[in-house]
Length: 516
Image (cartoon, rainbow, N blue to C red; front, side, top):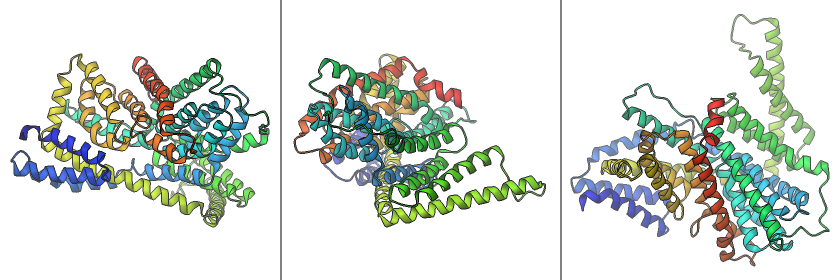
């Protein structure tokens, strides 16, 4: 019995989560319980728990993970200021006259929101409240409409910037370093969030393309499932399209361009995204639009010029031109500060920022509590011999490295029926990925395969989170059965996406190798 204590511990955790206990408390509680049980039975050295303080400090001081609350805040501001709603409404009217046009607009808006917010819950709820009723009024089959909304909302997990990719980059980098130590290398390489953002970009766009092709083909074969929008729906003017689409695209270019161009770290780029979202929300909330836009232009100009000609005023060998440039940069910064202050005032007056900060704090606390508890769980699991068992199981899989990877992907897929991506990322992946990397799998390619697999966990019944989000926001005529049936074809498309990245590794590895 004692030799299987690690497996019993994992089973106990699954049972505690499925019984509805809060996830972070379940993970930490099971870890403490089995640590003392292992100590009492003489199969674990309790002094291992002394490393918990180091793990907690490492989490708090991890510069990569600081990007999470900043990206979450960026998405929350865009959602609470109703910029997402305007985008959905405009795109729906733009594509509505095509067969499946509303479905196409929902997928395209889902991709734009994914690249500018990265928050699955906010995107699914927003589209469930705005797009789903419009699709039903147009005569869409409730199953098809529900499936499109659910799936488009999950694009926020694979299209950067995404919380999943930030956590995954941290986990995979640690696993890669551990694998190198075990190979006897002490001058180890690390992986960056930027590499994973670059690696996920093309697979994310491939998934968008698969969804669009499916909607177009289904619209042709079964037009009764996805009819055109009512003829009376007014097409948006060119100005309306520009006002709705250009600001989110500029924000995406500012954030991803800064990361992929090597100008800023993900954490710095996340703060740029937060300021950009705040300025957009300030204009939307009725603030002085001209002042905010001029301030935004000043900040963009400051970023470009200071990159081309940096000035360090503390140096003693500056020319008069450098002093003039420094003064000009200070004026640009002052103009940006005035615009930020005006946007803040507007956001506070309309209570946009109150709601955004509250939802950001809640989500960030949930993520960090889960990561901290998972550190405790993995420490006890390793102490009970779980790490050696996992390595032994994977090493003895039929089919060698490929067989081990297939087993892990299926295991993660099945866990996705019951667990959230954060729990799988911080509990399961640190146990299996070092062994897979040691078998010769490329860590970046492996990370993207796992990311698409984890994205599928949002769609798989019975506990897919997108299904719950949509159930809460959908009209009464849309039943749970409609939602479950609607996502089935898209789960198949997700599996096809995994297969394409598996068979064509260049989809995930070409862009990061070209940039980094």
